[in-house]
Image (cartoon, rainbow, N blue to C red; front, side):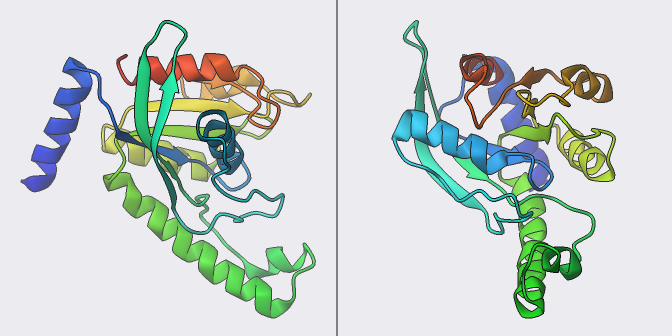
Length: 211
């Protein structure tokens, strides 16, 4: 009953009025650029980074939160939210994959344990966030088990979603491929690393929040 009331309240507020200080979750597979995007948002509006990014998968292994981020539009609108950067979700984590990057067996096993714990924590946080940005690598095949699992969990919870196709600066990227994979959601292409179309991304945040 409590979960039903919580779900109803979220839907009511979302549909009938703009929200302030809501929880905005960043979800996606490892190395899609979630933390790079989180850092871009925080640098632009707080003047500081949120976390450390790395080419090695599962650099983010704990949920990180930045509170009271205020984004201002040119027309005077303001959006206030808490940003929740979650560990990358994976269906399989093998310590031997970390060893291929040069890690010792001990460090690789430790990272695999922490990464597994991080995935569980990410899934638990789906019951806490109000809306989600699903960050996908636009150079990769969107029809993966991980992506379908993430989208399925969000749809089951009726959580508002914006799909962010990241790394569109790369030659192999394809925005249309991601749009075709998930036609039920709006998709915006950006480069979090270089800030490409970041203004368009911020405008979409205002639309998503009903502002």
